[in-house]
Figure 1 (cartoon, one colour):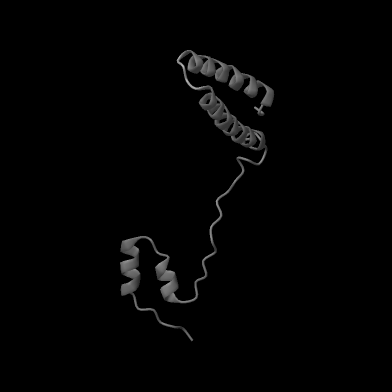
Figure 2: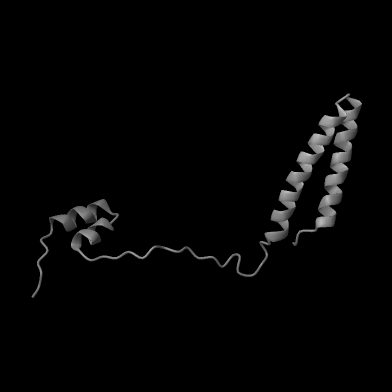
Length: 101
């Protein structure tokens, strides 16, 4: 579902109004309430920016495939470095490699 800025801002404003009413009731200083509002507004804007630009329903979002670095094997040692099975590696190291002419 796409991000709905108007709806999200309405929800945020209602929450902030309740919060500010409670802070005023508890005697919190007005300048601190304003600072808190400015900070929360910045956080909301960052979240809004993310929400508007991140659409997980876009075609292609789930079509990501892992990319592996290409391994270049030139020598036998390079090949042996890529073997992950310890038993196989041990047997390969014991084997005698002969260069065919």
